[in-house]
Image: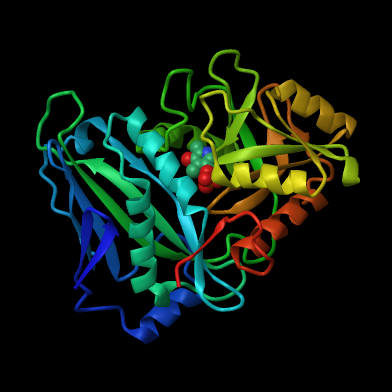
Length: 370
Ligand SMILES: *Cc1c(COP(=O)(O)O)cnc(C)c1O
């Protein structure tokens, strides 16, 4: 069976001969957790220098065969994306802004000296996987299928230069509600010992190595009794950048005249698609939204004075996560009463309603797959 990812890229479809038994899959979908069980299929494409993308395949999910000298294993040329497919309340299946993921993947690839996957082929590869594994999308509030496109350098060579061979893969895993017991604020630890990203570095790219470099700081945050690490800028060590793998928003004031502040994209922040969507949703809801730098001192002072009423983090995996308590070497503080604020809940609900097709999509964000 042959399909097509783009005009010049045929997709060979080899349906898996063995699939997870329906009963077992139903058990998995009842409480999927996150990133533990993968669907029956995957998409794979090869890139060879001088030839371009080739051998596009939709086939059974299976281990890869890699040469031990494959450059990704030594120098870390690896990038990824994350997006979700949702059951729509009226029936059918949709993903959320996959074109934005495709564009960001292209920018990440350029930063890591990797080849660009044509954006239409990226979206078509995701569509093909979601379509064949649609029975893997859990139904129920806030459940989804998490899709992980990624690219690695596969050339067998220990020299330090961009590889001449790459593999682009798309895999998927059912995801449960991030907060099955209701939205719970997290505590955060401001990392003064470690840096996530520096000017000119790879912080803007969704590069695998960024995560490797973040694990020790996350471990330190946990040792300090906090759920998550908050990164501050590498140069002045004053400005708040991100929380773990999520972007941050601060609410100044309350009610319809509240202002939302989110750290501006200085080149060291990952430009989140959730962040971008929330800026639009908040503005459409009548709030003023400002992209600017915000220091730890301003965060603490405004929270202590009560002018800062809410803080939340956002990203594809957890949608919106409220921040309740902040721990720092320079002094701890609590956001309002440490609970979940009304604007946090309002925006969270609005975004989920769009993603699950419960409200009309006026912005062209919802991409129907089936
Ligand atoms: C992926 C990611 C985000 C969130 O991006 P979304 O597109 O909203 O999922 C934020 N920060 C980092 C470091 C990330 O890797």
